[in-house]
Amino acid sequence: MDASRLRLTGTGEGLSTRITTTLAGVDSPQKVMEALLTLFPDATKETMENEPSLGQPSKASWTFEDVSLGVFLHQLHEQRILDTALDAMSLEMNGSTTSFSIARQAAVAGKIAFPIPGDEPVGGVFRITISGTGLEDWLQAATWHSGRGQVPRHINDERSMDDDGESTTWV
Image 1: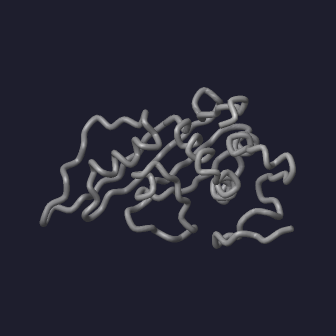
Image 2: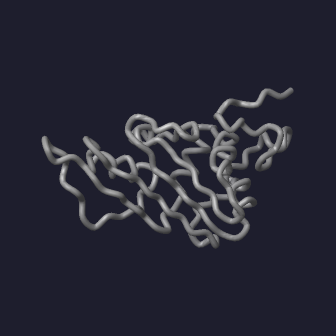
């Protein structure tokens, strides 16, 4: 990895972060928490719900405030999905706030998968909201890679993916 890359985490940078997820049916609180901690190791939960059983399904909503995005951003760089991340993370941007989802099932393996907007993948999602002044610049810096020197990218440019998740073809 490029050691000169600016290492952003979202904490102490004038941003607030929130991660939410909903457990229902056969969702295992223990496994969902393990998936969360894989990408967001400083997320903490004081009490854990019981595992689902016959007649006792999972039913809970979890919220984690001001969680570091450091490991998450590192994985975006490791997986080399920075342009996809820029598009997915900014698709619902409204001023100084953006929200996006990542698949919980991929998080179990330390991977990041951005579901197509409106789709609910098997295993559920973590919903991430980032707010703060200068968010657009922060997102572009957090997803920067050296290839942008040859092919510059910015939020909502002509190279952004379509609303349905399809890539835009360009030459």
